[in-house]
Image (cartoon, rainbow, N blue to C red; front, top):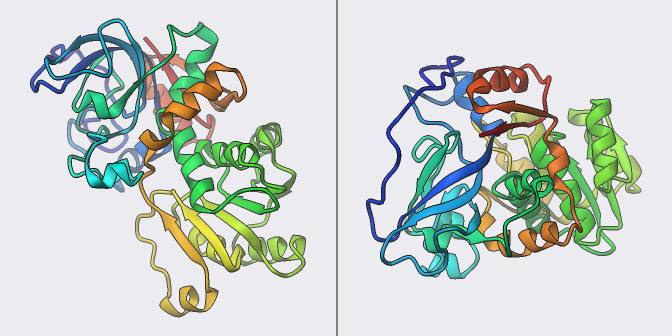
Length: 335
């Protein structure tokens, strides 16, 4: 991305092993994330930046210290580099690893190949080479599925719980899927878009709420007997969505926030009086990857349906435009 709104596909040198813990992966598929729209819209700085952070592919080369993956393995990688051995990683928060590096705007995986640092801690091999129809779902596991899953876990979704999901983008839809898999009794998807409502219901939503802001909070309260939801996932990152999520969470309930939240200011007294648990931030996708890969491999979940536009990599600029204009929920780029 040269600058806001200016995406170009160009040749660059093939990546090479630099550190003994690196791997080079030939990508099979990649995609465009909603968070890629922040620099596209000028909210994050960007200057001739390599884009992309979601990726699956085949290992082509490994450094001398790489033990967990080997040449020829099909792998899924997290959007955050982690060693998976430090104290933070061992506690399940690999996105806060002491060696943390964000793949976005550094490695750049909207490409044919990528060098992945700390390959042993970042990449997870699949049980074999996947059938082509599984690739979109495995790609979703690299970020949006893992992020939505973390949002649902952070929100305490589980049996007997009412879960509300604020946001009907890819992450929100994956939070609906996760809440269903975690056994939630009732799942409320907040959405105004018919095609996304349909997908939310496919993934397990029992109720749809179209209202936003204070009206959205009031509707959640109405549905839940005036109490609010036990578990709320905030999957947008705006001021309105954040306050809506806080307001929709019942006292003592849990809010998981996974929307990238620029310029959100929470009034202290509103948070204080809400009396809720909060957890969120960059999702520790690596914590969930082995289990998510197995669920996909066993065809128990189908997160790949979240991709509603597929383009070749050389048409990435059109993919960005389609997502920016909300003509696509999530764009898969083929290689």
